[in-house]
Length: 56
Image 1: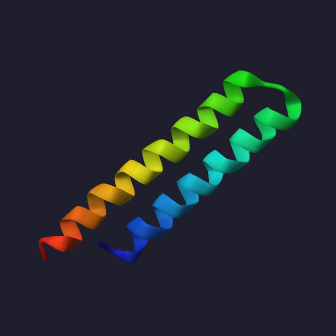
Image 2 (image 1 turned 135 degrees about the vertical axis):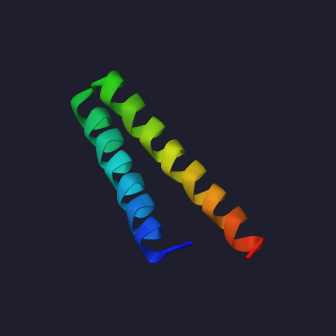
């Protein structure tokens, strides 16, 4: 996995955490859910890249 992919996935996960926290603080359930979804998507991408690395 390239370093660019790792950085992009980490940034996407961090953005999701920010959205989730902002949603909690402002009592915005939709924003909180979006943040959780963004984090899950980033984690799934990271897992896929780790599987690719295992087979290299």
